[in-house]
Length: 86
Image (tube, rainbow, N blue to C red; front, side, top):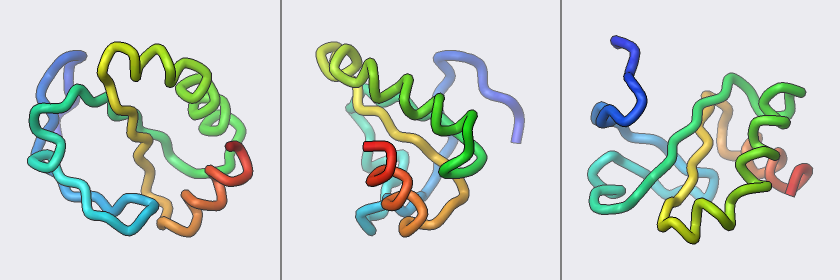
């Protein structure tokens, strides 16, 4: 896949959320969404990135954005990561 430029439309995708729901590009249509990608749960750099998004989540929400972090880890790993890092 080619690299995306800032502000470019996301390609079609299907992902399993940590709550077991399926998320697709079409299911997010009409919403303001920030997608950030990270390689692995519970690693120092990824934890710092997630904490920075969490620190500013209220600002994003006030502007009408939902924030999704995406990695290749499974939903159990995501749930553990969220519980540990709040």
